[in-house]
Image (cartoon, rainbow, N blue to C red; front, side, top):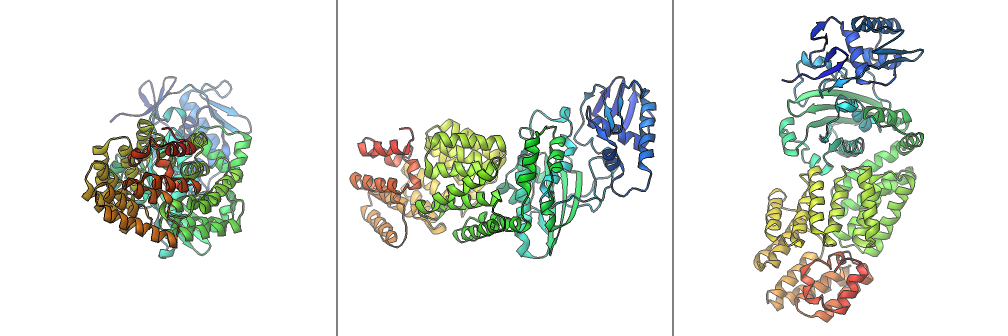
Length: 633
């Protein structure tokens, strides 16, 4: 096995063997001086204060004279290196502050190297959270973090320090990490929202921590392992990740306890573990030094303004934060009833804390999704969605979720395509690991008939969220619109093998079957989608399929059912136009498409690419509609 070395002058610091050598010969150096040398080398070129050394080497429970112990350790390091404190070549004293390692360094710190004890300590069994807190330096430590809301950030600060601490450690290819669902150890199923919410918050925080250096698997794929007993190696292979973060959460009364551990997939080594036991009200105690600590771990310099922003955006009423987590819990269930509960919780969170930007993005997500999944009226939902997204970004213009919300709103209702592209790229800049941003942008590219780009973009999303049913179903849709019918069928069939009740996949597979003349198979898929969803599109597609296959009576029955439904509730006019188009009644189809334009029907974004409209493309009225939506012919 290769040995990772830090080389300076004629010395070699063997991080796996916990050994210092000069010209190949091992030198005697006691444990504390060796750990101090490792710490200084890891922070090469930076000032390391005496307080930081004390914290690193002895932690909170100190029973020694640390000032004298530090002086002794520095002296022994210098003696071993042959360094002159007056004219230092290796360790420079910064009077009254601390020390700096100044020798030029050549070599790599292996991912496990930050824990010198790992060469001799047996690994803990996978799935067990060690009650002893172990920092990356391998020393026991009993000091908890100061805030609950900081937990997800603290996971990044301490856990990821094991492999993102120094510039020359970073790989050219991003390290991939999966945050598995935190276990709810409260014994109360009603607390699932908290453990799930903590998982999602941690994924979001880590996704934005080190763009280009750290890739984080999205929530949907991570949550697929909730309750799973698979090993770290199995999960790692299925998700294609290098590291797994797993843990547990317990919320009782006003106290919260969270345990987490970082596991390296290739050998299932537990790189790091930490416990957090705090008063829930400490959520308000986030300070700027937390953000500075994060930036220091990933070697990113923050301006004074950015440091202030880190403090401001993390200040939140604890009750508002709790309500926000409840809202996200119901939002992720994606049913109409649960969406209504999510909206109520987000609104209640904003009553507690009107300046809490994430709650506004939650509202924007709910309002912009309802017209798609529940046939809600666009005129009622999208203005509320837009107002909420804009308010979120007014409060915090670094919130990637706010820009993703704007992309979704423009995709379905705003139709300002240059603005959509700008917002998408802004979201990518703030959080390249946001799979939803890549998906929404891919959806726009497909609608704009930029098919190659769309398929490339959805692949980026799927690398971040490989087990997402909506990503798989929409990839099949994009293939269909790109004319790749066989590939689309294969993709959608595989999706339904994994998610047999996912109505979006049934609709898209039915569309491909209809386009390729397999009408009986298409009808079966549309009927399944009708039974599994609450929207009217499957009924419209049933009518269209009957019409183009020559079964006019059944097509008229479907049309009558749609019109009866429209007397009771909103039915997108586009869906009624579909049946008329299938029947060859182009004038009435265009009448209903113009009604769709008047209400800004979300389905109009498919006009440019959906082959169902090929019989109308030569009509001037249809050409006008295409221009109004703003998509290419």
